[in-house]
Image 1 (cartoon, rainbow, N blue to C red):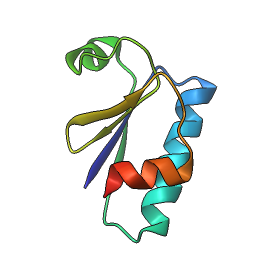
Image 2: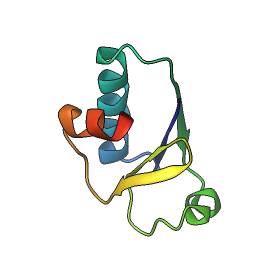
Image 3: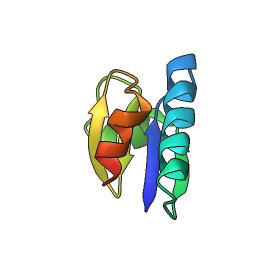
Length: 76
């Protein structure tokens, strides 16, 4: 599973990365976590508000940091 965090590296972006990693580890998933920080790359996903969570190429949420439990729902 490929998990991508879209954002410029702000505190919320880092929090989302930490939350996504924790959720995936708790679910014992095999995953790759990538941070996408370049605006041109972020725009390719159609995301206008960061941070955003992308799972296997699909944007799951943007503009807020979900809880670990919410992220687990996106990873199922």
